Length: 326
Image 1: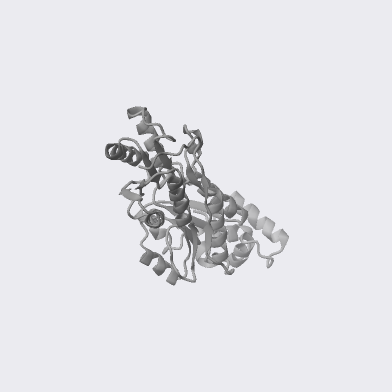
Image 2: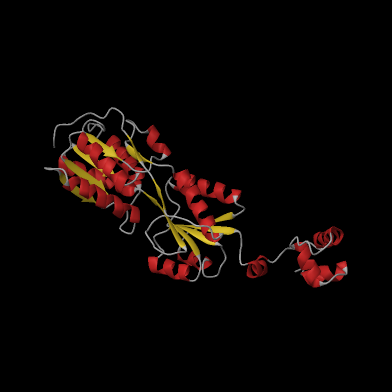
């Protein structure tokens, strides 16, 4: 492999002069820089990124850590992140799995955006104590090197519960996400509080997993319990679509929007094409990713930064009819 020593020898200059020239320093004249760059090109010189990182203490790369890549959720989030990082001169690496965690202690990236329940919060605090810059989207952590950009999960769950109660339901099912999900825990806490404030309301929990199969299983259980009159808050749209699929194939006599009302969360693109249109909690995933990137760059560059929250709204379902109290 060609080194700067080889370039220095062929160009007839010192190693330090080559180093200055390759890094754009004004300590070297334009004429000498041009000659050194020409020699480097002729020798097919490739800079040693690891050595440069040790010297400059930066890689200009940011990591986004996700629990997995399944479902339709991540596209807009990552696009918003990428666009903002590109504008600021940073590149993006998307990671998943325990082995990828070593990118932080080994300083292979300048900072990280965390939406990954495989990280223990104590582990993240340890990284922050060592000076690593982190933005968390899936937990609450207090540290000078950590910023929070969180969804307003509680507001979204409250909107969903109030919508279903307003349609006349007196029994609400909540289909949760995985046990380790911060967002699921926050939504469950809020919908429980709404149920407790409503006299005569029965509240039931079905454990889900943020995928269509979980929605199908929940639909089967709810129909077995109720015979068809029910209100369901699915903690994401993918489970709600699973319920739609099951009802359409196994129980077409149970009409969504008349017998059973379903509310999702995320307003993913597919929700627009359900019939009737799925009621859901909407927010900008693109903005969430962009804001997380902005906050991380501020941490990396030493700018003041405050925790942020992504606000939500309710998208009402089409043709939703009042039901008799159940």
